[in-house]
Length: 282
Ligand code: HPA
Image 1: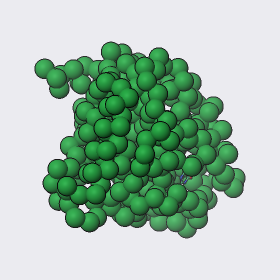
Image 2: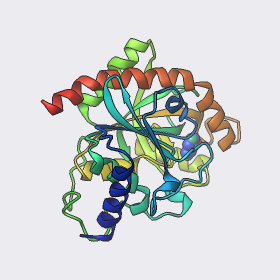
Image 3: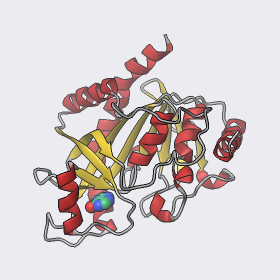
Image 4: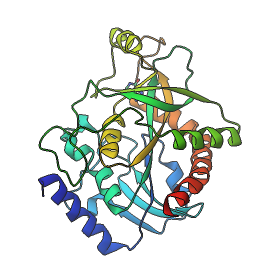
């Protein structure tokens, strides 16, 4: 067993000692988008700091804890806060939480993030359903010896974002009366925001939104066979697309302003996903 697998196993054992909750759906709440977790009936809360060997998030707007709760009858594990590559962790640490969730039983994962709008048709406060991703600018979390226990050496990424899960997100948005953008998410390492020249390049590459997370987690999830969907909250227009300088305070402020709609959307998505997830268990 490789080092990453060993650490994943140890963390899973530590979690299982503290709760017998077995989650089937994972939700990662991005920067400033953690409010949803405050509104649900938590059954168990585990701060990352109580788990030895678990990477600790230092980013602003990230609480750093697992919350276990049933939402619409679905056993869920929520991550209120994640770690980022720019914090200095190796990619294998950045994706460790995703691997832990998969090991706990999560077969479907909904990732959320705050992102800059690269598509000039987008507006601050829009939500974007991620249809595909560009992860070529960050190191792959799968570099190094492959652990066959986790997944294949060369995983397919043709439909990284699951079609059926995306249909659930679209239905949920319609039910909430919210319109969604559909677009491609590009991950950078950060932590600096991009230059206008970089944003023009990313637009040429096909990106609609840019951020500092998610794509690497999706790679680890797909490696493991976990199905994923992703939503970006467009907290700002990317560099050069507005005359405002960028700041993480503004990112968190927009995320906070749209938090109510975002929570409503997440709740509706989980309700839609419940049928899909039950189907898996039949
Ligand atoms: N760039 C990168 N990451 C981000 C941005 C951005 O403009 N906004 C929120 N996260």
